[in-house]
Image (tube, rainbow, N blue to C red):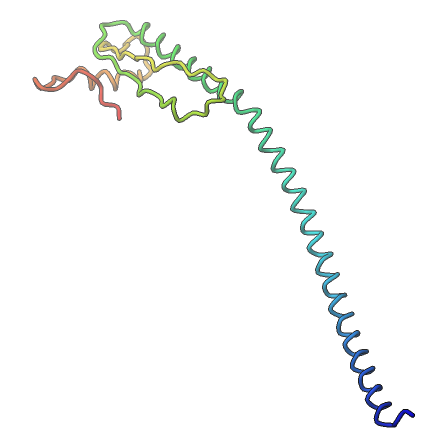
Length: 158
C-alpha cells in the first residue's frame, strides 16, 4: 500500500516540477520576445546593408566618369592657361614644371588615362592692356627679380 509519506513526497515533487515548468515558460517567453526584437534589428540592418551596397556600387560605376570629367576640366584649365600665356606675349623667362603624378598608386583596373605632366611657362612681360589685375604678374614679378650667381631661374611654387 501507499503510505502518507509517499503521497506527500510525490506531491512535493509535483509542486517543484510545476514551479520549474512555470519558470521555464517565463524564460522561454522572455527569450522569444528578445529573439523577435533581435530579428527586427537584423532585418533593419540587412536593409541598411543593401542600401549601402547599392550606394557603393553606384559610386564605383560613376568613379570613371567623375575622374574623366575632372581630367577634362584640368585639360581645359591647362588650355586656358596656355592661351593666357600666349596672349600675354613677351619672352619666356622660366619654365615651371608640374610634379609628376604617382601612377603606381592608382588601381590597375582604371579605364581613365592620365596624361603625363606638362610644363607651364611664366612670361616675364605682364599684360598691361587690361585694367584688371593679371594673376601672372605676381609670378613674373618674382621671376624678374635679380638673382644671386648661385640661384636658378626656376620658380619655387611649393
